Amino acid sequence: MRRVSRVVGLLLLFGVLVSSLSGCLRVHAALAVSPDDRVSGTLIVAALPVSDQDNGPTLTIPPELSDRVRSEKYTVEGYVGQKVTFTDLRFVDVAQLVQTISEAKQYRLSLRRAGDLVTLAGSIDLTQVPKDRADVQIKVAFPGSVSRTNGDEDGDVVTWSPKPGAVTEFDAIAQYSTAGGESWVKWALMVGGAALLAAIVATLLALIAHRRSVRADRAQAALTS
Image 1 (cartoon, one colour):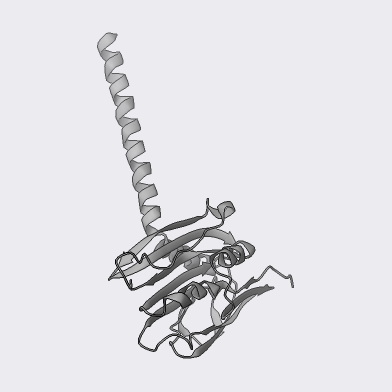
Image 2 (image 1 turned 180 degrees about the horizontal axis):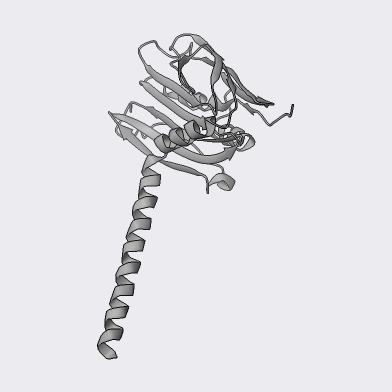
């Protein structure tokens, strides 16, 4: 049995929203844990603006993670804020990202690896959030079958929808397996599909351009010979 680094306080990012309670909140987290203990996913942190100058919650990304973490403006259905996308982060990198985003202490989440088991445990305190002012959803894809959870299970993906005005406890235990890698890849494609599609298109365009260049060079050579 080997011990792997844990992520403590992943959901501390909710603390940045405490000052925005006068407007409706939207926090969506879609995370995927790979068989080699890497984490990829997307975080959306936004709120309904209280004025024309309100740009929603501001998140800070550690400079040393800038090659794997990207932040962009989020404006959907009247909500404004930021969308953070990250790929291939170690558990300690995710912890660093969360600590930089917020120093609040109202929320906690831990991921632990012991042998072939990965355990997730945590809680979210939304007691200070009005019941009609929150849209919070957390999805976590595990690299194997889920043996126990208090969330909504769909294969190796577990979903929690914490309710405002209450403290939500959540937990899950999953069995690492070789087959789980395939599910993680599928989930990674879901959370990063746009970037993947852009890369494929760019590759195809480059290949087509190269072939056209080769044909043009051959034609030119034939004319001059």
